[in-house]
Image (cartoon, rainbow, N blue to C red; front, side, top):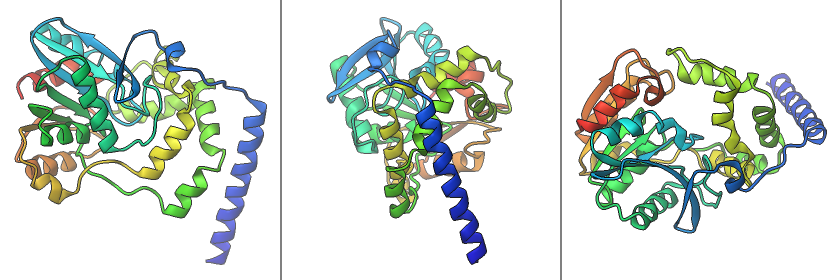
Length: 302
């Protein structure tokens, strides 16, 4: 027992020393989000919120991404929904993508941000589709009556606890997250390894341009502090009991080969919400990028 503990402590010390040396030897300056992305922004609940839009008429649809997902993840689904006659908007939740960082990074804060976003753009009773962590935001908006329907795409809307309090507090003083962000923005290979697993089992061309799509957000001012807070908070969402007592219109859409969130989780959430479950065959967690037609059709038929 003490031998194992000693080994873990030694490993942590080595990582800390390596991290400090790496941070001193590298320089990845952060920037305002407006310098990193030249798309659309709007003020939403005091957060400068980045967003994309497709279509100029029809009923509104709001698309919400998941953990560390910029709104580009909807760039293939959005135009398909607009082509069917909808005004479609995809926004970056506070803490992700190119929206300015402003704590707290919680389900309540994200819900208020999206509500303010909808109010600013005069979007009344939109259908809200949320991917992964964004599924919980879609459910909360439906519960509060801000969304006509919630579509959960590969997200079970459940909350999970963060690390123990002492570890969460320690993380805020460690250089490890800074090192991880610098690695992700200066070298492609660590990100490619992660993306290969996230896109699996679907093939994807992993090149520098795609890595930048995912990692440019980490250059934003306060990105490290935001991720530290997010890790400490744990995954935001609901308990099973809360889902079972949520009287909302909902549809659950799931890739049958999702290796991040298993299909069993989607089945259980669909059961809890008394929602229709729509399966997308042979796709993984990022079906919205690897099979956008199927995801768009599922949203449209919800």
